[in-house]
Length: 70
Image (cartoon, rainbow, N blue to C red):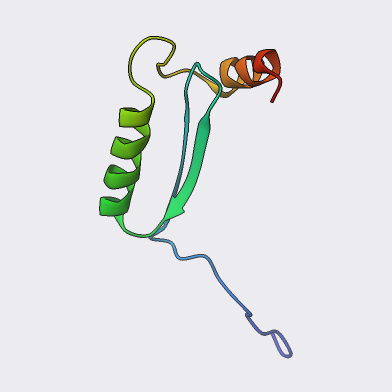
């Protein structure tokens, strides 16, 4: 179209990932490099391992945050 400019565009090669823990913590991440996903998710999993932790959905994590006052 005449007069249309693109200031920025999302790369098709990017991916967005969300992960939730039953303790209430969550991670939301958008990356272009698939290797970065592995690194960040491993760090999240290491920090959220053991008693009181585990994967869940967003609603469960939100309830845990509300329960702990945050």
